Figure (cartoon, rainbow, N blue to C red):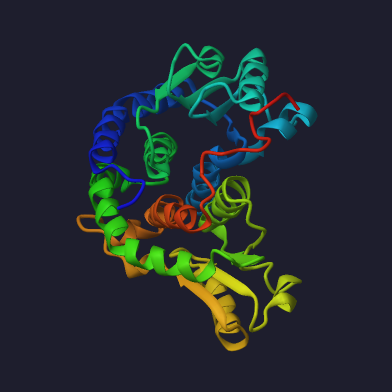
Amino acid sequence: MIRFSREEYLDGARLTIESRKTAEEAADQIWREGYDNLFLTAVGGSTVPMMAAAAIVKEMTDLPVFVEQAAELAVRGNRNLTAKSVVVTLSKTGDTRETVEIAGICKGKGCRVVSFTRQEDSPLGRNSTFFIPMRHENGVEYEYMLIYWFVLRLLYLRGDFPEYPRFADQMEALPENLLRIKEEFDPRAEEIAAAYWKEPYMIWVGGNEMWGEVYMFTMCILEEMQWIRTKAVTSGEFFHGTLELVDENTAVFLVKGEGACRILDERAERFIRKYGKKYVILDPRDYDLVGIDQSFRWILAPAVISTILVDRLAAHMEAHTNHDLDYRRYYRQFDY
């Protein structure tokens, strides 16, 4: 597969699984100390697994959970953010300005700051109460695994997710499943890229626990890394504006989920199939997860979509556009 190292990927799996104990121990200590609410805050692609986690948590518990864009939270604050809050942040580099800033603000308020990042001595690591090591090189799915081992363990300790021990163990089988799924999807990724890389405009639809992945692929991959114009809209909001742009000449992509809001995805799918001519439907149910209970699939479905989009489709888009995924015109090129 292009732009992919099997050895690096499997090494990332091993290193991520080794970090499980650290994530769970942080959750255990926070549970013993007590807390009032949970804030998940970052910027850009780092918010994606947090969006999914928050959507899932809302279906499992009455624990107040807030997903915040770090720059906005730093400027306007939130009256629910107190010394009894637990703040979860994520930055691979550990030096993302907005994330480092909000971590410092929250730590100054007496909040416990749980940071997922690569280096403990990074600016973010130094502004944290708990450091959860992200030791993998690539793979958003590993970020999902680490966040789930922390957030869903908190729910287990509250009595909201009694199946957690089985889920957490089975999640260790996720990388091998996703490796196989990458290989299965790769030919289709090439077909999609070959057919759509020249599109002047794309509409991407998906919602609830999948919304983060739609946001990630349109903004971080297509816009930032490929300079392709896109529109991202949730399945629920699709019928309140964006549907008017669907015709036989407009490229539409639908990312379906496996949770409670799948019914909204199916509603959008019926419309797209009836009125569109150029569309792609991406459904995680098309891929088996061996060794993982069916009841857990909806929780892991965002990682399945991430592995086929952020990893495989992005690589094939790059091959056709000849626009290096690592090239930036503005991002991190100067102060702004």
